[in-house]
Image (cartoon, rainbow, N blue to C red; front, side, top):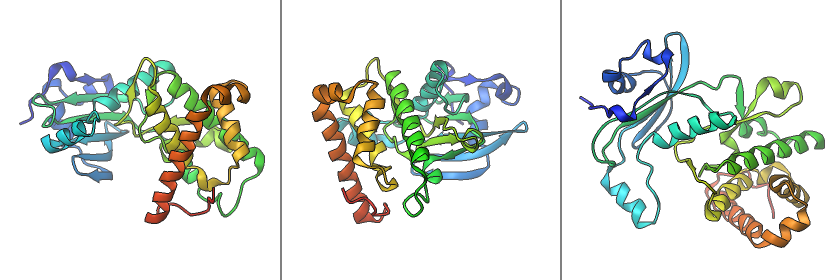
Length: 278
C-alpha cells in the first residue's frame, strides 16, 4: 500500500468530495480511462470523476539508474508530478492559460522510488498549434492569419518566460489555441504538458535558448520567412530590432543554429516534413 506524504497533498473541493486524504494516492492510481501516453515510469489518462473530465498523470518512480544518469549529465532529474503541479499553480496565479490542478499527491520514500500524481481539469475546446497548422506546408494560409499566429505565440512566449517559467519541451504541439476564439479570427493560447517545467526568478540563458530553439524548430515547416523570424524576435523582446540585435545578436544566432540542428536530426529520422531549406 502506498504511504502518502501528507505535506505533499492537495485536493480541491470537487475531488475531496470523492477521495479521502489518506487514500488519495490509491484512488488516483486506481483510475481508469483513455490512455494518452504510456512511457516508462509515467502514464497519462483522460478520466471521469463525479461527472467531470480530467487528465491525470501518474508517476511510478524513475529508479536510481535514471537519477544518477541525469546528475552525471548535470541535469536535474524529473522524479515526479511536483514540477507540473507547481507550474500549473504558478501559471494560474499569473493569469496564463494552462491546465488547472485539481489534485496532487506523492508517496514517502527516496526520490527515485516515490510515486506521485497530478490531476488537472481537461482543457476542453482547445486544439494544439501542431494540428491547427497541419496543412500549412501544403496549403498556406493568408498572410494576415500567419501574422496573427506569430504575434500570439511571441506574446505568449514573452509572458511565459517573463514570469520565470521554462518548459523544456516548448514545441508548438504543447501550445493550444482556443477553438472558439480561433473561429472568430483571434488567437488565444494555452500551454500544457508541463511535467519538466521549472520556474526561476530569472530564466537562465541556456534554458531560454533551449525553449526558443524548440519553438522555432517546430515551426520551420510552416512557411515563415527570415523576416518573420526577426519580427518574432522584436515582438518577443518588445524592443526595436536594432537594439535587440546589438545586445543579443549572438544569442539569437545560437537559437537559430540549435533549431536547425534539431531540424536536421528530425529530417534524418523522418520526424519533419522536410519543407524547410534554410
